[in-house]
Length: 138
Image 1 (cartoon, rainbow, N blue to C red):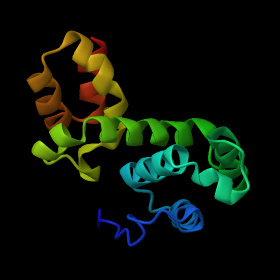
Image 2: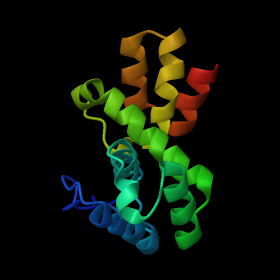
Image 3: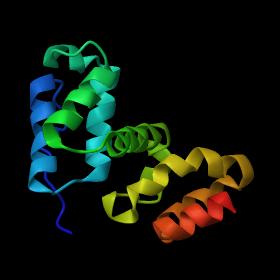
Image 4: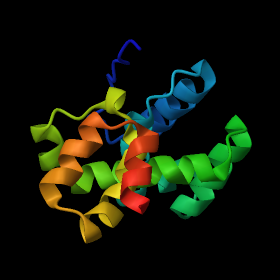
């Protein structure tokens, strides 16, 4: 998969980020990690206000209605973004990126409760999504 260039990644302009999210959905070139990070930015900085929404839930609903995406996918992307931000330094150390299966990221918290930290970050890099989920859940 060819990486998507994110010219807007350092932007705080709600309309720019919203446009990028919608373009990714429309073009079916979804970078799950990029989408998650964008959604976190919209939520944390209150950028949904600039899109005529009162809160992140209203923005997600509007995004679902406009793009025909299901709510659970968008909320999962948001959780992926949150997990990436929380564990960014450790993920950067292992060279984690979009190709490593960002859908594993929401399972980090659960894994850290029962597994050794170094094992969690080694396995998140080397295991498939299915293997990692099975290893975490037991």
